[in-house]
Image (cartoon, rainbow, N blue to C red; front, side, top):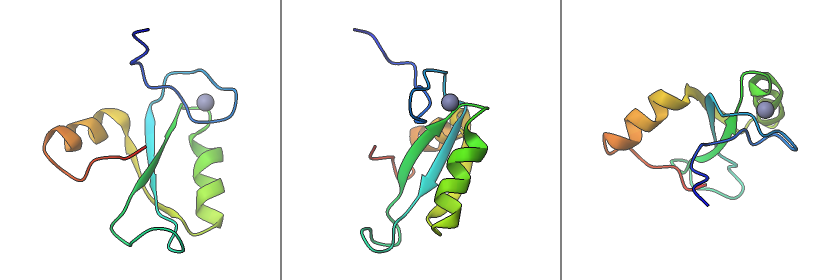
Amino acid sequence: MSDDIPVCSAKGCRAAAVWVLAWNNPKLHTPERRKTWLACEEHREHLSQFLGVRGFLKDVVELAEWQRREAAGGSAADG
Ligand SMILES: [Zn+2]
């Protein structure tokens, strides 16, 4: 039940997430909105390329740093 370790968003990957990829699809989201994907070390490049070629990728932040920003009251992730 207590599955609160964030894991990588890559398909089939169960590795612990290290990175947060913040992205926005301008056709669906307002400009300040941020969707987030989590990535392990191995999949960070793959996932950021996937978003990057579509022009969606806004930011790549270490998970620890992202959580620090959230705790500080920044704009939170919405899954
Ligand atoms: Zn992964």
